[in-house]
Image (cartoon, rainbow, N blue to C red; front, side):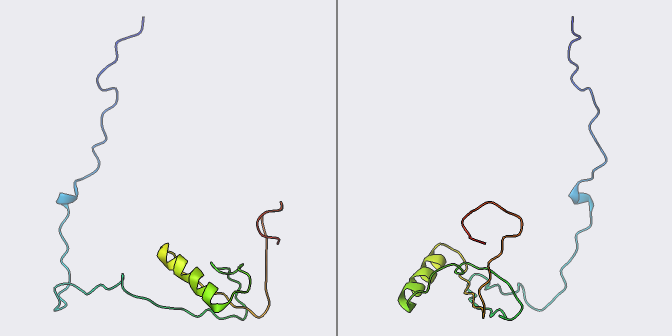
Length: 107
């Protein structure tokens, strides 16, 4: 017959201390009660250098589009909460380094 289970076979670990035991650090006085945060309202664009940099962003594999169609694509990305990135390059470059079976991109 099996022995009845004991309530506690192993003692609990008691090496951790409560965070209330640590001293509270004070923020340095800056003269402002809080620093302003407008991170949700910032809109910016970064231009990526085209020489020697290989980057493939959201719109890399679109066919040549008229301006109106391109604007619709960008508006869709913004509505979806994505960051639209335009890629421009002197010479197109497609690479498939670690995958040898045919897939979406013809590398």
